[in-house]
Image (cartoon, rainbow, N blue to C red; front, side, top):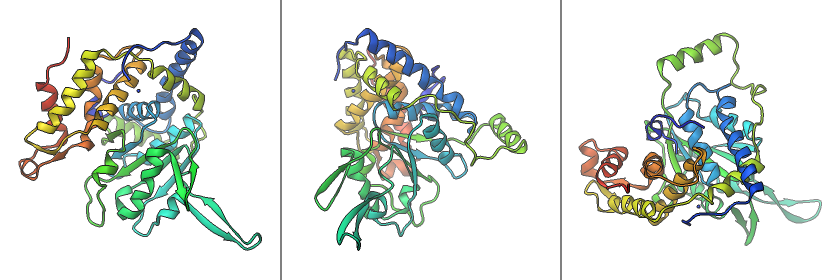
Length: 342
């Protein structure tokens, strides 16, 4: 999988030490890497461009992490996730997060059965491999919080009984960056549970022309019959195992820590990156290194994944916002000033 010129521009996106891998596992890993590389071609059958976003989604799947997608309406966020789930042969469900949505509508609830005179658990849409939480910031905090246990523990507890979720399980949540009326911003504790935050850009002029030509020739975005499954749960599992063997030099580990600590000392930020953010940056950097065909992490891997992994884990000071500062801009400055190991 060839990297974009700058992963952080369009937003792509675990312990340290060398791992050991058997020859059989190595072959499985190579097969998995080739299969995951083929995803771009399948997604391109329905979505024009967005290669960096696809890469970020694959990195999240390899890290068993969740994704927050931000983009204006009409940039094919839902179509992208649906196509990806089909190309990976994963179970997919979508929930439209509306103001009247209740927690039980997401997780499931106990339903009384008149025939047996007992309460049976009816699974909610969260019992799937790939859950699209559409416009997650349009539902009240009580319903948003229904995903906390599922995202962290990969289980749902109802009436004291824990029910495990399928493996893999990834939440892909979307939100609109320009419309705030009638919305409920996600609390920091929940934002921190998303591995990466990816911005879905408006396509370039050439990409938009190609998109219109497809529609003019009869393309139907609801028909995904041309998309073939090129990978599955087995390839993801093999890739996840291979990522865990990627070597992390102590100097690179110290670089990750220095970057995160610098955010806590930045005068533009009132909230810096937590230790969980440091482990997330480690995980995404290792996954990107493996996708790039290497078994070790470089400082450039860390730099490439710093913005999508950390941008939602920092909070600007009000005076910095008034001056036009952005999370990406602050992170860019930190990356420029924290010395990278050679």
